[in-house]
Length: 409
Image 1 (cartoon, helix red, strand yellow):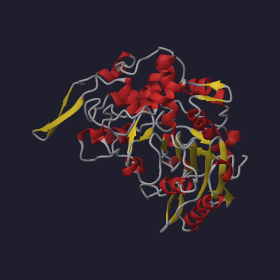
Image 2 (spheres, rainbow, N blue to C red; image 1 turned 180 degrees about the vertical axis):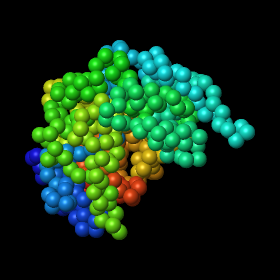
Image 3 (tube, one colour; image 1 turned 135 degrees about the horizontal axis):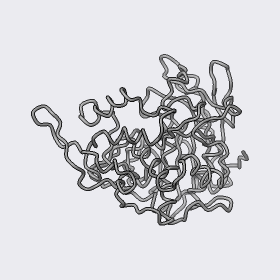
Image 4 (cartoon, one colour; image 1 turned 180 degrees about the horizontal axis):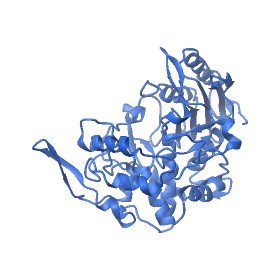
């Protein structure tokens, strides 16, 4: 990857050097196994570094072509795919989801507790595609043991075992449909499994497997040759190991069978739109460049500039903010698949109005700042006990503080 002098795009090479200093301290303190960081401005990569190890047990340094479980950085890709169907006139944002997945329309909604028992009512309004894209669908996440809908979701997960790789995606959605919603669609913001439902919705409308659609319509045109729902045998050696990390205990390997969403070395019949993809640094950078270019990269137009504009406009009412999702909550709203910066005064560091992106559970992270023509990408495999994970806010700050000439958009 060619790296240009930061001064070519109005930034300071000396101050960008603070990124490596910071990562070296984190790795030395056993807070991080290894990481790749890319910063790009005005179409030129001005920082690229590989730090630490991708396999601690083997003593293997982080490599440029390493493959990473990107978890929730899958969500923007699925959301974009849904908008491709929207742009072809095959769905509308406010279509009831039950139009395509009838079981969704039968889901009840938690109302209140009466006589020590939870009470449920019908959906009003019905859940729409828009609700799924914005995480205002009402789907629970299982994270609140005191809420009846979350508790039922968690119990179902433990009894059925969601995301088995030999389970069909249709069966997963059937499990979800047997559960109640946490609130009426549109009645709050709750980060969860909505994008898994979008992945199945795409299969139904496009009449092809989710993985095939993504490969044909997005990955192949963009040259994303390493992004998929499983890692084939010939690429397994490039898969970075995944760790629990903290200063007290160091980095502890998570066994493949214990990794969230299963062993990606095995094919899956249940591709998770919420978090199932594996990708590389170069692949995801190509995806980010397509976004910042308004839907086009190297002559391949994936969507229109208007589509990107719509997806990166906040859709969450201010009453439901701040978001309840890690470092992304401060100053951000949410569009159709991305967090969106709304309030610099509340931000957890440096940003611009309209900056957008998202994160993955293993501490991957990306920032797209159209105003500053800036992309920041962090790739690692660290299931950290520190929440929110510090590098996700610190590294972008270290990029922003190196800017010498702000764009006056």
